[in-house]
Image 1 (cartoon, rainbow, N blue to C red):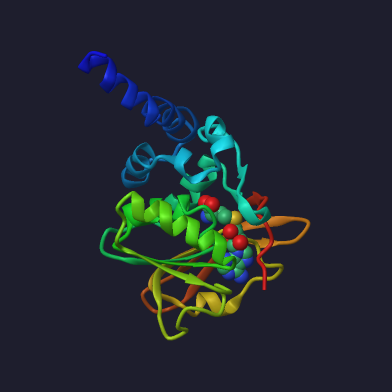
Image 2: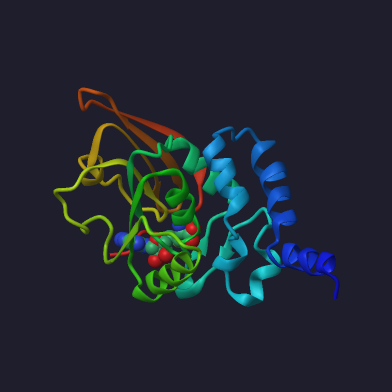
Length: 219
Ligand code: SAH
């Protein structure tokens, strides 16, 4: 095999062509403009976060099932929620619902530090394995109910929740710092995505953005 065909093969195994098409057609063309989010989504191998049988589907415009009856969100929704957080390379983000770890990787690329909490230890462990293999060292993993752990004293610049509580959890807004941002789906039969912003004086502004479909928050 010539050097040329070998490098072409590696390129194809890494699925860069599919990934760039996903970012162009599903994300940039639909209006996502945050450069750090777009760069992260061009870089992160989404196919490594799904079961082997679903690798061919990994770059499709849809959510996919993962273990424990959970789902990895549609790429466009991941991009939208990531952009709404207004990621800053100097800041810390809390993620509730590690799941596959795909959203966690986007956060690790676009924030300084990520604290991520997952209800199922099995999911937390497999996400940790993939993210370590990809070289991320700015993520701390926790197992439990993300609404109560980790340490309630800590406050975050941004919070993202990827499972829907039935009611708005006021306790979470308290964990946002001044100028903090949070995105969270809320509801049961009908769910809506909310954006909560805190200003420099700790006043919160809550907006209902649009209808969404997430797995229910457990615990
Ligand atoms: N962001 C994930 C989406 C996973 S689906 C991804 O990209 O793959 C939502 C996840 O939230 C599931 O893994 C589910 O187990 C987890 N979850 C549900 N309730 C939770 C809770 N109370 N605390 C932490 N994680 C929870």
